[in-house]
Length: 378
Image (cartoon, rainbow, N blue to C red; front, side, top):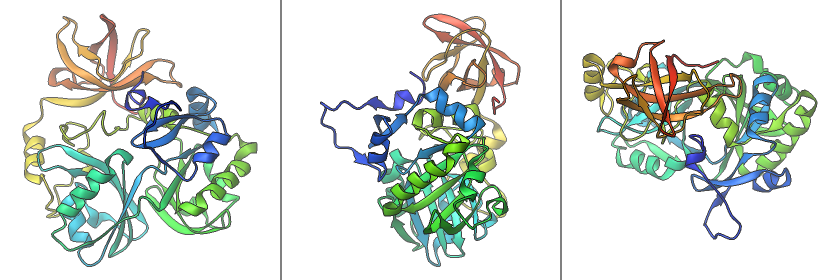
């Protein structure tokens, strides 16, 4: 199993497990999706096959239901000060219509979660967090809200569709008067799409193939899903599941919470220093601890690697040196559908960080040669 598959299990109809369903659950069943339990939700892992869906996104377009993600509103006069304290990135760099990638430091050098921060106005923000961490993140926000920010958990009311791939903009442009080409990266607008008003059209992406994320009220999600599928059919748009979402993000070298980052990994170790702002007098949870790490250095770092021989790296596999000594662990791994080679991420000790360094991945007691590379892999 790959890194994603280790986080899910096949849902059997004869097993009674209380699971949440997104508003698009029936749509997935009608399209023959293979459903799995993931982060407390029944979600489509694949429709026509992970590789087929992956390549559709790389060459044409794919649409994902990611409505299991969590959404928190942060409002009021205390919103800015609260977010400056609780997130690692500098919220002062935002302006209305802009977004940034960030994380919640946990006060112990680790990461509560990674997230997106959208600014609607000076006193109104939207946080988008990982599905498996919704309750934990909400509790963390509430207990650290000394600034009196108005917090609202809207996760149960919002649906999120992601249309990704080189044809995504052209397909969606047929459905909206909003000029999508005028939305820069990590920006968003609110407008009409497919006849639905007040759609938040975001341009962030996690696939490296371009595309948009669409936030709507739950009741509008099924109509939007069907209209986009119809509009994109002639351009090769197909529905895609969480399996392809994982292989796509891994080809870009993006972290997956629970695998590559967690409560025990720091942003500095994970190569996320670029979302950890030590400038402009920003004071945030763990600032001093993380600054000391940055100055003194860390003993391990998250690095990308490509296998030089046949094999597929998996989460938990040992990374060893030429003498067989353990130097790290694989956190994510898969067979790249584009490269047709095994790729992965893992934490390795200091002497093996340099790009081009030779390492070995221990697969079924055999040490497979690999090379350290700097993501993205494609």
